Image (cartoon, rainbow, N blue to C red; front, side, top):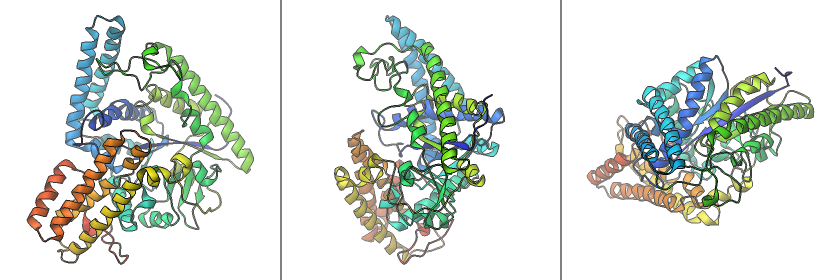
Amino acid sequence: MSSAVPGQFTLVLHSHLPWLANHGRWPVGEEWLYQSWAHSYQPLYAMLRRLAADGYTDQLSLGITPVLAAQLDDPHCAASMYEWLADWQLRAVEAAMDDDRDRIALGHREFRAAKAALEDFETHWRHGGSSQIRGLLDSGVFELLGGPLAHPFQPLLDPRLRRLSLREGLADAALRWGHRPTGIWAPECAYTPGMEAEYAAAGVGHFMVDGPTLRGDTALGRPVAGSDVVAFGRDLTVSYRVWSPKSGYPGHAAYRDFHTYDHRTGFKPVRVTGKNVPGEAKKPYLPEATAAVVDKHVDDFVACVRERLIAESERIGRPALVVAGFDTELFGHWWHEGPAWLEKVLRTLPQAGVSVGTLASARAGGYVGEPVELGDSSWGSGKDWRVWEGPQVEHLVQLNSEVTATALDSLDKRGEHRDPGHRDPVADQILRETLLTVQSDWPFMVSKDTAAGYAQDRAYKHAHATREICAAADAGRDNRAGELAAGWRRADNLFGALDARRLPDRHGGDGGRR
């Protein structure tokens, strides 16, 4: 046991995928969901169950976006995930029957992994994710962070949709898990002045920004613009130790390489080997060689956290806060050894004299400094909005603006004549498709050239759905509008509680609150 250091360390994970169900399978589509589910979400929740069973509490702040939660609870996704796991096991059997010695070893290894994943899925996931998430929340092992419906880039979103999306996202969490989040990981850590007032109105008391948004001074949370809403910033000195745009632990030569596939099996058979080594020259992956490397990286990270807490506490003259934030999918999906590293870190930190807590416990513990004025920002390239509104995505910015205007105009017209006592499935689907059009994922994927074609297709597909329902509705073709809404609802079967009657009106009224 090391001597205690001042302050608190907080790990924040952001779990998110866009809506993928019924929109393609391979190479981009539902396969992305099932890979992340098997390699990140299953190991993460298994770790949380073990920690909870051992009496650990307040171990991390975990963001789960409503659009991901919808997929983890969706019957189609659950059934397809079960089939995907079974297929994983069958592919492993085929590999184990090969003539190549390395592929045989790979098959045996993947069979054991698939078997364990199937058993875990049958035990904990067959009826969706909500039941275990609710139980883990009740145990106190993590703090839940919520977010707006469909993960929009909020600063560029129409204020009416922005307020609705946030309120409905928080209500969705309460409906699924019996916990209404008081903290959020804002999509893309995006902020523009004034959003803190919307957060306060929705009951959000704290949110995440990137370190540069707080000008690098992340040692304390900061109330924003005279409000009681606290912004917590990622400490990049610590966070980039794990993963940065250029380096981090997952790039170690011994770890499993993410990008290189064995095309006969679909498995990943090689290790990183070296930064500039082409796939065909990479060496076979040896799991037994990674344990010592994981331990080395655990020790390095824990030492870094200790040093940072000591240095920051000395700098500000009081116990400091260090926040490390990552996408959940880094652990397991991108970095195969990440889940093992993560659990060892959480178990080692207290032994090293580091107090571990959540953003909520940091706020309750007084890790809050003086108020601050924040500017436009995100955690994307340049820490500004270029990824979501730069020249390469001007067409999507224009698309979002036009579709939003079309939808709101149509919804306002329907609102003038609707029966306030009954839901309007046409209006609900217009709203649903509009929110799916403006997901932040589509411009991100285009800007980063990661499945850009798929992202553009998805944005234009949801835009088309919105427009054709609106056109039929505006023309008074109610039967046709209803048929179109029902057809798109079969594909985009999420957010069943979304009610267009709660859309704030054009005069500033907030609609029906939840």
